[in-house]
Image 1: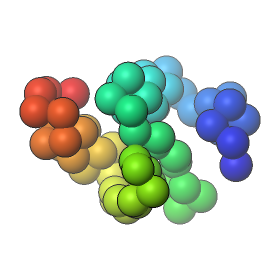
Image 2: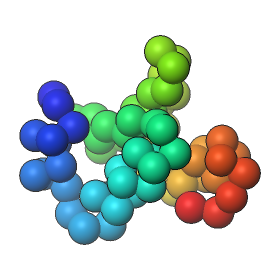
Image 3: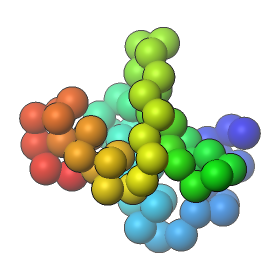
Image 4: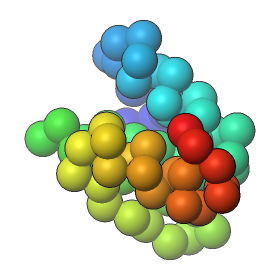
Length: 65
């Protein structure tokens, strides 16, 4: 599913999270089971929850998300 198509199915907080990841150069996709998948430089990181995604982004960028 493309990010543009996916964005139509996200609520405001989820869309904001996707945007924060994009600003960091990371694509974030919400999977069908409610988990997330982050990808950057051809590497992928499955993230179980939104809290996990925020924590991972903070570690990758060195700041709070």
